[in-house]
Image (tube, rainbow, N blue to C red; front, side):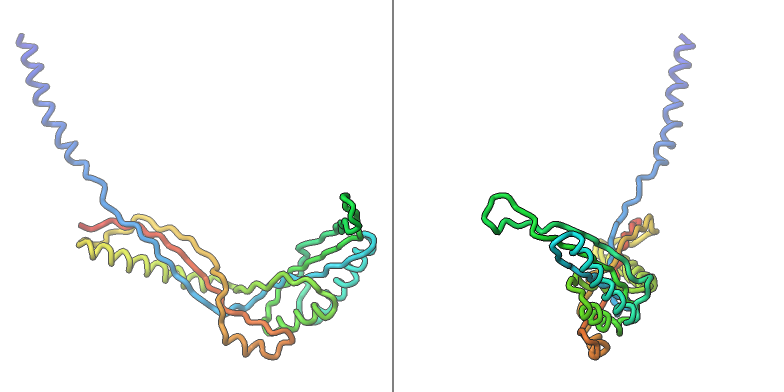
Length: 235
């Protein structure tokens, strides 16, 4: 019986000794997560034009021969307008039959062939953009799929957009925590996302393009950065 009593006493003493260890586990700190967006706009300094030639012929060979002759003339004029070889790339080359059932029959028949060759042309001097378009159209380019403007070196603008995004995220977090009567603690995590925004009109480019054979306006390119930051909440 003495042995059992001693065991009960030692067990009772062991329970209080383990309780302080449980009390030392502090709860996870409360956090707040906010996303800020920064946008920086700049005048574009580079343009990519998608243009080409679509030709028809009674046979596949005739359609392709006509297309090749017209595109060769386009390339010569475009290069003469100041576009380098490295800035010209074929993006689409198609040769398809032209199906028709104009005779009223239920079965379509081939009424010739259509050849299409589309180029991606990068123009590094926007003052020459109108001249490049004019040269291409003059010598046979009859397909124009659009002009995209951009920045040759986007990183400086992206860095400014990142700074603006962080500042907006902090300002919003301080507003929210201030309204709740608490403060911001240390930063727990930061993540980033972003890219180009659609071009926006910028009418001052009109003066630079006024003398171009084909009037073109570059607009502005918006560079966007999104930053998500998590802070601890200081109670």
